[in-house]
Every structure is written in C-alpha cells, then in structure tokens.
Image 1 (cartoon, rainbow, N blue to C red):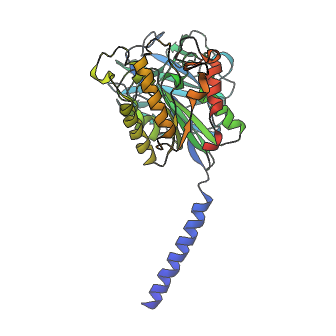
Image 2: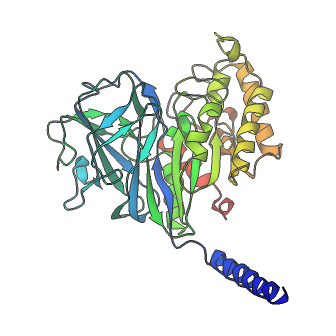
Image 3: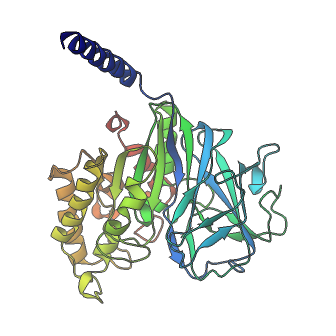
Length: 403
C-alpha cells in the first residue's frame, strides 16, 4: 500500500508540475477574429439582380494579421437550407481585382461545396496564406440556382462589393459585375496567430457601423482604433458588430442588442474585450412613440446594458461602456430624449458596472452647445459623425484599457 501511495504521489507531483509548466507556456497558436459584420435578414438587397445563380464578391478590411485564415459563411436569417456551390478567398487588388497568385478555393470538411442549414453558419477549413494586418481580403461566394426567400447580409457596409451572374469565384477582375453595398453570406474572418492575441468587439448601431463615413476609406471609429492598436504593436483584432438602426431593448433594423448578443459577441473567435455604444435609437423613438415599447426610460436602458455586461462577464470578457454622442438637431431628437441620454450617460460614467468608460460624448460635443456635435465632427445630419468625428472617437480610446 505504501509503495502504491508513493507511486501515486510521484505521479500527481509530476502531473501538477508538468501541467503548470505547460499552462505557463500557453498555446502555440490560436484563432482570432480579424474582421466581422453583423448579419441581418432581407428579402432583397439594393442592386441585387437576384439571389440565386450569383457570385457575391465581398471585400473586407482586416485588423490583425495571421499565417492562415478561415471564413465564416452564414445562412442565419435564411428560411431554408442554403447551398454554396463554391467559395474563394484572395488578397484584393486595386478596384477589387484579385492579386496574382493569391486566390484560394475554400473547402468544408475537404469538400468544395457546403449546405448551410436555415439559421446556421459554417466555418471553412483553414487556408494557409499570409493575411497582413490592415489589408483588404476578398471572399467570393457562389450561390447556385435554388429557392432563396431571405438572404443573410450586412447592409449599409460603406464598402463597394460586387455581384456576378454565375460562378465567378475565381474571376481575376470585376468585369461584367454590378456593385452592391452590402456584405452577403459572409459574416467573419479569423486568422491564426500566436497565443497572446485576442479580439475586441465593438458593439453598437450605425455610429459603430460607420454611417456617413467615406465609402471604401475605412474611416469608421473601429477602423481608427484598429490602426492605432497595430501601430502600438498590440496583438488585438477589432470586430465591428454595429448595425444601423439597432436598438437595445426591441428589434428595429436587425434583432435587438439583447437578442443578438450571444451570436455577435460571445461566439466571436478570441474575444477578450467589448466596447458597447448602443441606445440612441431607443431614445429616438421617444419623439413619436408608435408602440408600447417605444416609451423607454433611462432605467430601461440601464437594465438592458446591465444584462449585457453580466452576460459578458460570465464568459471572462471585459466590458467598456461608451457614452452616447450628442444628437440634438437630428430628425428624431427631443427634449425628453435628451434628458434620457444625459441620465444614461451619467450612469455609464459613474454606475460602476463597466470595467472602464470611453466618453465619446465629451469627445464629440460642441463646448458651446454640449447637446450637439462639434460642427467639424458632424456629418450634417446631427446624428452621425463625419470622418473627422469618427477619427476623434477612435483616437479617444485609451489603449491602456487593453492590458
């Protein structure tokens, strides 16, 4: 018995010591999100000749780089299975053409085609290719003839993408294509990085999505943040999960923040940090409430955000609250809504719920009229920043928050 006990003790000692050493070294590599866009459902997309027998060429801007990529294709808002006949990933050249010798066919369990169930998404097999940080990749998805009643796309992407008739997944140029300003059937790209890398999810509405930023210039505030992180040599990807018109408590354009949180935040690859800028569209409904849920209060919004923070913390994600930018003068502004915005912002600053605060309100407001944008930062609609405003927001994020 004593000899057996000694053998067991030696084994336990070896296991614990060896295990601790292995854990201290950390994983040699891991998958981290470099780009993402929140999908929504649509029956038809602007500029789309037809959903089937088409190739959707999506041009996306990376944040962090890696030695391999995998692509997330989505049918999350489809009402029937979606057959993908072919899909490719490549490095984008000027005008959306493919850089020579960079095109790679995607496979799914070794096969070139995949059926995505209604309400689901799939990951491609890894592709060994060098994806540089802050570069443009191209994901081409061919959808053959089939019944498609609802597409899964991210509209209002401020990005020029293209559709072709037939299978043009390996086409070298944009000839015979039509422009489309949405990312369709692709929702994310992950890269293989070292074990220290992680991702930041920026979660919000059109102000995070980048409405009124210069198209194809990547001037959204999350883009500015990603560039600063790369310049500071921080191994952090930035995933933009903004949806124009999105609300915290109720569905609007796309599911509510509460409804989409698990898919767009918790499920993201390598997520360690979260920035929430959400609530102005809930407040805007106070001007002309049409439904019972439109008559929200600051306490209602506080409840919704507290729910999101609690859910993120359960998964070890640190959460930074961003104050809502000024909106007086916008089409749906009202004195009642401004009172709610002020109370909500004060709670974000002082409530102690978040792991840190990013005060976008202070950064973008006009000192002479604090309830309005600084004129140089205003896109002109008094709701969305222009390029200069987005840059000020991205520059205002304290990088020391991401330890």
